[in-house]
Structures are given as C-alpha cells and as structure tokens.
Amino acid sequence: MKQIIQLDVNDEVHEIAVQPYDSLLRALRETLGLNASKRGCDSGGCGCCTVLLDGKAVYSCMTMAMQVKDRKVTTVEGLGKVAGLDPIQQAFIDADAVQCGYCTCGIMMAAKQLLAENPNPDEDAIRKGISGNLCRCTGYQKIIEAIQLASER
Ligand code: FES
Ligand code: FES
Image 1 (cartoon, protein in one colour):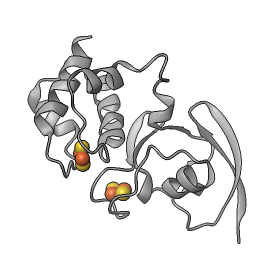
Image 2 (cartoon, helix red, strand yellow; image 1 turned 120 degrees about the vertical axis):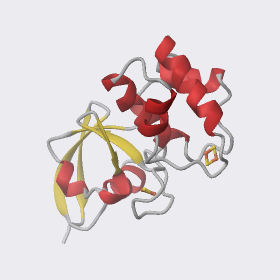
Image 3 (cartoon, helix red, strand yellow; image 1 turned 90 degrees about the vertical axis):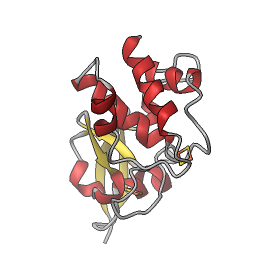
C-alpha cells in the first residue's frame, strides 16, 4: 500500500506517495520527473543513478524512497542551472568529457562528493572517487581531466 512521504530534493520539499518497495531512483524519475539520474543496471553495478544523500554519493536504485524522508537529496538538476552551471558541470563541457552522456550525471555527483572532501585530488584520488561509476563509452581520461579542471577552478 502506498504511503505519503516528504522528500527533500534539491532544497524543495515534495509530498509524494510511494510503495514501500519503490527505489529513490523511481521516485525521482517517475514521480518527480527528475530524469538526470539514469537507470542503468538497476542493481548497484554502474553508478548511472548516483545522487547525493546528505552530501554522500549513493546509488539511488539501491536506496529505498522511504529511507530518505527527512534527509537531503541532491541530483544533478540541483547542482546548477543553464544560466549558472556548477563548476563541475562547466568543466565537463570545457574538457569535452561527455560522449553519449548516460553516465555523466552520476559521475558528476560522485565528483561533487570527491571535491567537497578533497578539493585538490591527484589523478589516483580522482580514479578512486569515481570508481563506482562506469562509462560504457570509456572516455575516462577526459572525465578525469574535467574533474582536475573543476578542482583547479
Ligand atoms: S542504475 Fe543504479 S547502480 Fe546502476
Ligand atoms: S559517456 Fe557514454 S556511458 Fe559514459
């Protein structure tokens, strides 16, 4: 049976009805229409669905919507707007770090946590920071350069 919960997403509180088995990813995409977080494997293996939960990167496909009530969820839609992109978003554009783009939003969220905890990561730290996110287009070098660029800025 559905239950009503309050979900704080990108600093906006939404009251939504969810089933006990609904993932956060499903609530974001199908109930709130926030489609930046992607469904890849839907089983914790690819990172396409990564969002921040109280500032920590989590797989939203593996997080139940009911678990996150009263906590802060940030998706890439909350990082910045077209008129004022987050430095990570701008760096991905400037470093040409996007191919098909399916992994990109999840990797940017992992990078957001990484740079919040370590503003000047070396390449090894960047690789480790995004190790939970797969890019099927395999453009890792430019992704790493984008995160380095964001950290320099
Ligand atoms: S869709 Fe969540 S980890 Fe792959
Ligand atoms: S850019 Fe295509 S999966 Fe990463």
